[in-house]
Image (cartoon, rainbow, N blue to C red; front, top):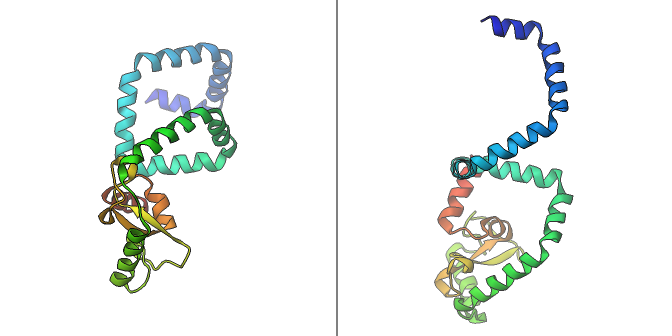
Amino acid sequence: MPDKEYYQKHKEQSMKYNKKYRQEHKEEKKKYNRDYKEERKDETKKYFEEYCKKYPERILKTRKKFYQLHPEKCGEYRNAHKKERMMWNKRRKYSFRNAGELTIKTIQLVYEDNIKKYGTLTCVYCHNPIQLGKDSLDHKMPLSRGGTNNYENLCIACRSCNSRKNVKTPEEFREFIRITNS
């Protein structure tokens, strides 16, 4: 392959030329990329959705890395979208009205049954004993997804698992743990 041999011999020269070309044609390249993305918007969206389903662990790692490298950007975004977040929280609060009342008696029963089942306060997801004060009451089916405050929908989880579970169902969370631990 003569092209490959040529490139290997003139690699440094070729890299310099390409860099210079990119700098001189920056605006043209930006316009081309913008037009290209616009023309293939639906196609790109579909591809990205499939990619996210296929490689959730890669997406998670990339996002974590971004948050670690650019905490100021994340804070800027939060501040810039304060009104949207407030509206979202109001809608979220409104949707929880149908969850029913959460009583002290129900909570106490959930805690007592957890201790009876495991012998000590234990997380239902990681099955590790929980120190007092490090526990949290979890809704198996999240309220935001139509869950209720009924006894059957409540369990005890460590704060770490409850935070990582977020709005996932128990099945989705177990799959998430399986993917992230492998």
